[in-house]
Amino acid sequence: MAIETVPGTASAPHGRLAENVAHFARALRAAGLPVGPGRVVEAVRAVAATGFHDREDFYWTLHACFVSRAEHRETFAQCFRLFWRDPEILERMVGLLLPEMRVPREERPPEAAEKRAAEALTAGADNKNQREKTDREELQMDMRLTFAKEEVLRTRDFEQMSAAELRAAERAIARLELPVKPIASRRTQVAQRGPLPDWRRTMRNAMRRGGEVRWLATRERRVRWPALVALCDISGSMGTYSRMLLHFLHAAANAKGAGWSRVHAFTFGTRLTNITRLIRARDVDDALSRAGREVADWEGGTRIGACLESFNRDWSRRVLAGGAVVLLITDGLDRDEPDRLAAAAERLHLSARRVIWLNPLLRWDGFEAKARGIAALLPHVDVFRSAHSVESLEAFAAALGDPGDHGLLARHLAG
Image (cartoon, rainbow, N blue to C red):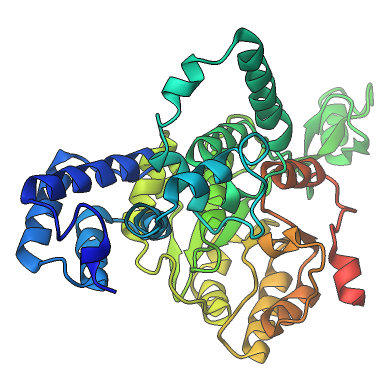
């Protein structure tokens, strides 16, 4: 399909094209992409140089000018589809944003990033009608929005959130705490009223007083705090979930008085990358931006078995000493052989004090552990929980301090 059929492109003068590209850039910026005036100028020049008679060439020309990070590809694709293709764009976008007040709900659920794209493209479209509403209607609207923000946001899937909802979810995640219980060591230390007798110190004190034992010296066991080691899947199937869970890890790494001795973070897709130093930056946006530049396989394929083997070989002895807790964040969809994945997962389980698996696929009520990668991983984890919403992360954080909590592990192992 040629791009001439799109209003404001081939049939329009150069000034109209520049205006449409600028408006498209504003929509991308509202959807969360870092698009500035310089990129708009580059995009207009690129389209003028390459031509815009073929839709695919036009798409990739704008993509090259506006997309600089892998996590922005889906948002750009949805904005492009809605802005340049759909003849009923306004009606569908308004229906997507306000399903209960404008039009009946759509028969299909919104695709990934579609709601953020729709929100960006319709920003300001209803300002005139909004000003004409009565005070009573405005109060009803405020009540609905307040209810949606406070009651629905916690349970909404990360993939279906708008840009504003994602920012609110990030703020909620930043407030989460990961409680941890100390580990009792076999080593002891001097204590004034400890439960263990210290015979050596008792006799030494007695010898200084002619052999008279005046009091019994005591000791108590030392405690140590375990480390948290997170392995986060950043393959294409994880999408928005991996970015939100990296916010979660940043909050854990920078929390004060959380109890963890250290927080180590690794990402994996087709290869393993250590981002521990990067997520320690105080500003979360700066930390994730630096991590995005460091990680080369973002939203690529998945080789969980090979990446776990790499972790076991190169990092396990360094970061798992002292009873570390491993947080495995992945959907379990692997390209490697299941036997290879099972062997790597078994070694990881033997090296760690506890292995906790957070899987976004558990958001589906009918989820079954039928995929080969999932079936290979399940026998080698201690906890199996979902991680698709703020509520699921809150439930995980609340259960983290309970050694008897196994999440949904027993149900899916039995199945």
